[in-house]
Image (cartoon, rainbow, N blue to C red):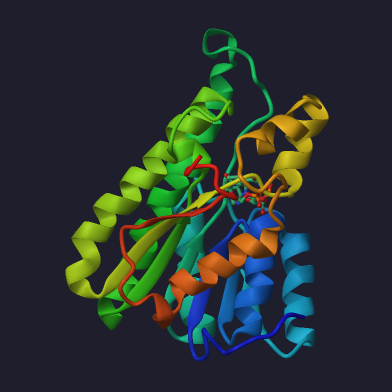
Length: 257
Ligand SMILES: NC(=O)c1ccc[n+]([C@@H]2O[C@H](COP(=O)([O-])OP(=O)(O)OC[C@H]3O[C@@H](n4cnc5c(N)ncnc54)[C@H](O)[C@@H]3O)[C@@H](O)[C@H]2O)c1
């Protein structure tokens, strides 16, 4: 366990896509930093296992299994956070879907576009719509949406994913403007290539991607999920009190190159 500073002491945080990768790393980190965490993803067994591990380490964690593209599932998760912990101070809207099919746009199955939009765009929308009313009541809150270098241009990822992450960035900026007067900060992480299931599956399907993914970065390696989670932690904490509407690049220098 790395050094902790109680950066989220006394706060409740909801994390989506918490069953693996960046979301799982954030769940462990946020809990270690003092937050009570509400974990959401579709895989209930993985979530239960993770929540048990967090509780065994002295943290507080509850789960709400569900699909972020279904508004009722997201509302149930927000309700669960309030029931278990009394409030919702922070949210890391991190669940995402990229697909591994690199077919040209006109040959890509329509279901890939639909799923990519449903999880990344509708999912983020559903989260904001359910979380913000709770934060408005408190007059404070911090939300971090997971975007990608694919929000900045053509990375080589499938077209629907690039479009979806541009939408997450736009939604973040517009929502940040609407809710800044109400004490709610909303930011996005421009995530670079990170060693998770999502990347492992893509590299398995297209082995050349292993080097292609990092070629444009200044740091020629993939991030560890905890390195992304640390940035989400900061944005969710009071230490980021003047950060809103930002697209924080945690990408090994990709966007600057
Ligand atoms: N890994 C990378 O290189 C990379 C780069 C840029 C952005 N991202 C983004 O980071 C986020 C996390 O991805 P990851 O790399 O940790 O991958 P991952 O596959 O390990 O994790 C994705 C998580 O989202 C969950 N999820 C997927 N669809 C869902 C749905 N409909 N409802 C609820 N949960 C759902 C999965 O169960 C899993 O917990 C995603 O938004 C992804 O687009 C990842």
